[in-house]
Length: 324
Image (tube, rainbow, N blue to C red):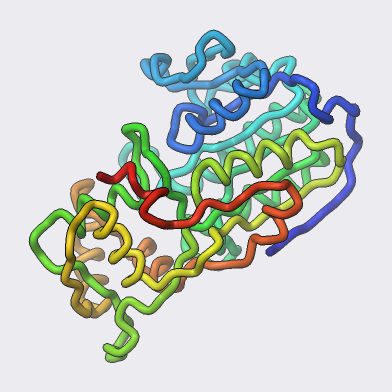
């Protein structure tokens, strides 16, 4: 578990009291669960949404909905005005530069703009959805999230950066890790691929991930954001099991009642295919996604779950029942 702390002034309002929380990215996958968690605790919400997406906001009766973009400082100010805390959840898996959708624009510059507005409005706490494995010299996805973390750390606000491994749970009509694997690898008649580097066929499908349930992610975030402590935190969030890729494929297949054949798949030809086709929205993978997948994504988050009294949800048939 990685944790970094610095001390910043606090108002003393964060000890189980109801708050006003500004959400940026609140209509996405994690955002919908975070809205549930905050609303269930009685907190008032202010949510920035893209024009036309107002109907995707959950718990509208507890939300002030602001229509606008990340580049609209007035919309950001209206969203965060009067808030005790703010959370930035915007993230993408693939870039589309032609439409201005890039990791740097959305995961770094958008976060920095929101942090600046929050500081201007004297918002005391700021939550940031990051990712396990972020680093300054990693993929553009990892580097943009790392830079957003550094900006938050330097802001002087009490910052809570959450670094989850791959997140699973009912997607509610949104994009989600296991649903994608089910649709792309389990349901088709072709064998599932067990990726491996170079000529190491014996290592096919042996890299490990630690899937973490979406409700665990949002509960840790809410507890870290609303606890009495006035310390900034960076929390790595991994599920209770580190599972090899081949075991993840097997468990998803079992959850949907399938017996799935899996065969070794060398990464090099796939990288060539990604190079040629990753700009096409229908192609399921990019080179960076493949590299991050093969690097693995694990960690020990037992201390975090213990700190907050949260029981981690296992990656098993019961938790994967939404895939049926």
